[in-house]
Image (cartoon, rainbow, N blue to C red):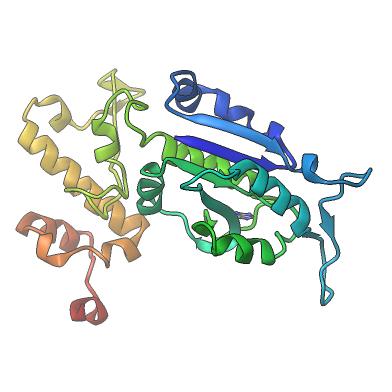
Length: 261
Ligand code: ADE
């Protein structure tokens, strides 16, 4: 997969040299190219921002450097990349979207600083390529760069050959599959007793069926405790008798609205 990132802080992306993503780059699975937005300005101050029309606080990123930078990066190539613009006012970035991005051959990220990018940039490219304005959560960062790091890591680990153990993607919280819609439960490793805390004995039993059931029970309990809105969206047809007992035991009730859908 090719990934281009245009930013006024290309040095922000040094973490992409490290660990899983760094290795994927070395192996040629990920081809990440960083670009300095200011290289596409033509004044001595290399200006990328200006005051907002209509007034208000902060500065807005000018359309001309972004237009020149994006044109230059995408060139005459066909098909063009999918353009991802991180912003707190975008659609939520989810595991589902990460899986979708992992199938793309080419992503182009346009992280903004200040109050955002002049909206005409998204309008201009919206007619030529797929443009996604994406939020990584309901909080406001100082810029989109950290959001790009999050998205590239979430997508990169899904690329074939990046994770050593392919099974670990399947069991992820939020991944589709048998555990779909459930948070992953607790995990343990050696030693069996640490500072008086024991590993749940079932995990040492060697009984794989009972272990799978215990893990599902824990996932159900944790989902009810930490993300009750996710529990409310579980497919009730897919719950077995034991699932219902665990939910009952955790005092979880589907509300009348949930019953209706
Ligand atoms: N830029 C600033 N805050 C952001 C957020 N929550 N998600 C994506 N981009 C952002």
